[in-house]
Length: 205
Image (cartoon, rainbow, N blue to C red):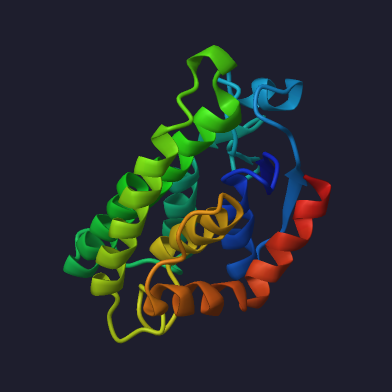
């Protein structure tokens, strides 16, 4: 049994989307970062957390970090990923790291300087530079798109889920939409039923 702890307005959205793509049952606890529910499963208070019960796991094993959770689920259920030790997996991991370093990091830094950090620690002017870097990275992402229609090929994979979440996040944060090829990818991902099912949880937080 899987339990996802974390509001859908956080990176927990990626985990919810992955579980919907895999058609797996799960329970969702829409907890905010640093809430009592989040601290109960992660001493750092960060979300998302995936709690696994049953199959000899005892009272509940917790996995933190959205990327680690995505890759665990993909590997465990043999879907949306390539086998470890293959060149295809190495290319997948390279793309995943690119997305985290270039897209996720810029968006998260902008969020920190908008509402996460104490007001006296925020540097609002940095967001102009972050938007510039983000736009440049989207150009590089467009260059890395293959014949598609997804980053992983004919069907989405771990990197697509991270990319789709980041591109949606960018729209909310008013970051540049990027080249047409990247915008087309974002539309294809958002049109998936699993994305819609995860998005339905936004109303609950």
